[in-house]
Image 1: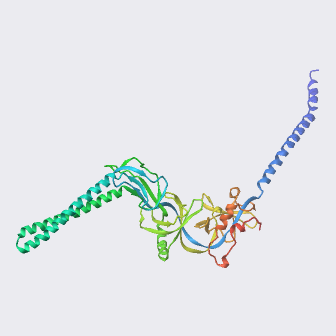
Image 2: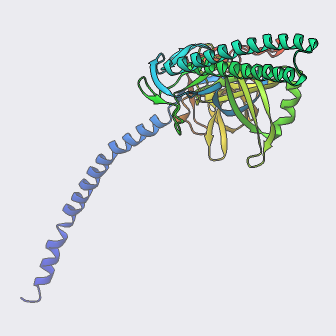
Image 3: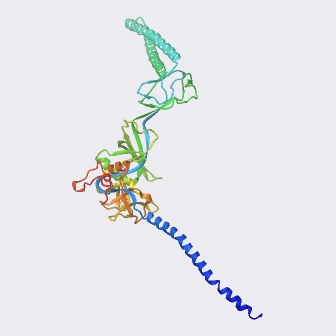
Length: 420
């Protein structure tokens, strides 16, 4: 009986094997069913990632553009005057306020003039006294000359009268100088504007005593801002060309904001007499009429110095240029609506544009909006450029001279949304 038990257990275990296999099959099918939707979602994501990127483009145009030298400039007052008192006293009246525009010879302050009026009256009285004494001495000299000819007086007496007349004449000249000095002191009591310009902060006000010993206080500073200067420095390698072009006529200089907005247009006024040995640059200064007062002393601007004109240059909007680790680059849209990333070398151009020296051929489309979503080889679809970029694209070539064969439509009009 004990030897027949094991075969019976083997029969029971083998009967459970079909059930286990069926359970494993069911679980496998369930796992497959659960993973299928996930696979479908991943395919959807890949499909979405391959959708074309909407971009705005501009066409690289061939134009004649001026050769520009770009530098950072600092606006300086055409003239700046520090107003200080020339006489001492109490400021009786203050006739100017902070930020006021003044004209030449306009009164700014009145210092109490009573002391200086009294000094001038004293000097005038002294002069009148000496005038009377000099007149009397001259009359006496006339009589003594007649008496000397008659032998009534000696030569010594005549010479003494001549000395008296000379002394009184010298005293009279001194009196005139003292009267003039007193008049100037009285005139200095009225402080006027030596130039036309704009007043800064008034530093000393009515009621203060000024001009005493060791008192060197500034009353106010006046800056002349019409016209106005912009000074900037350029590398010394540009100096020969600048001198050459300046000898042919005035050179145009544009002052722009960092965003490319033109503030004013002026002319090169001066070239410094030496190159800065520490930086290897030459300092230039341009003068601007500044009628709209867009330029203000102390302001930093971008200065564009125009030299000779460059013919048949490839021009694109400045916003098409991106900066990478290896330098500037642009995305070029090819005929199959895929993009190619091109490294470029550029030069500044007016009206928010750049000249492409290498990297882009005339007529190629460059992306001006939507670059952040692009990678080399990505597919794109064209859209209309935003208004600001459309204006910039139009300005990239507007106003530049070109031969009829080189004429091309404005980039904004070319990129206004039509697929090739």
